[in-house]
Image (cartoon, rainbow, N blue to C red):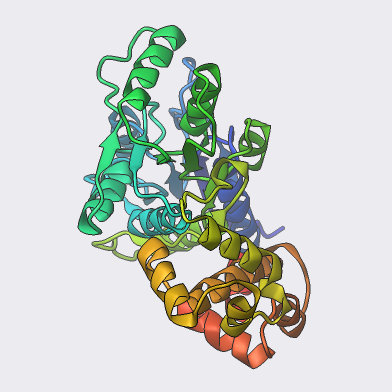
Length: 381
């Protein structure tokens, strides 16, 4: 009897959140195609992710969170791919990771679209992310001319009561309405709970956006948390592809392969508009309600007592974009949701989102995402 030829691959990724489960699921799909045998989340006697001492495998895919884990894996000398950038200096392994520059761009664009002008970042040390995530966010804001307060967690070491007091002191010094980028759903939930206990209204006074989406955690929070949906499936698939290349003798790439986030999933925690201009606020709400009905700027001028010139000027001053750009933005955001969450044809998506034709929709979509709606759906759906 001929024995089947297969590879043994260890996957050292926690599956306690949707990020980990989605990445592992994608790795599993690739593994079935390649006839790999997977060892999922092996642990030692201290319940740490570790390879069995006498394990004889061909490669490892890991979420490399600690130097101790890196040291452990290096002893095995196996082809290894890290699916994060928590330890970017580890050049002995390949790396596929979320594009943090693009994540910050999405976060800032979303918070700015709400009319917010004051920003902060909440990322207490939980061992789930590196400093780069919020440093890039703060740097991009500075480059755009905005200040960003970063929560100083150095003194937070004595549990929830002290955390609560420390965070409230920090929030009390910041101007409002405030847009806060929380590193992932865990600190985002904590911040929402602290605001609730302290009588701070979310999202009206403090809008919260999590840097990673988790359906369960974000929907259990009050209010439900807006979050950035990451390309977890692509992350797992590309990580497995890179490991296959390394197992077959390929060189470790000098730079990590970066996976762009998909979109912001808006829920209640950023469902606000920080605009003092009551008439402009009414116009923005009108756009949200009617963008899918073939809405044009000239209709806004008819519906509201405002000239075209004044309308354009006020949009530019308050939002940094034109009324036409806002209409198109609302349509494209709805289109992305339909592409991901339905099986509607491209023509039907275009129609339901208010585009004049599927060709018009495809052109607008490709201009923003550098991919056709069909290609984008295939990659992220």
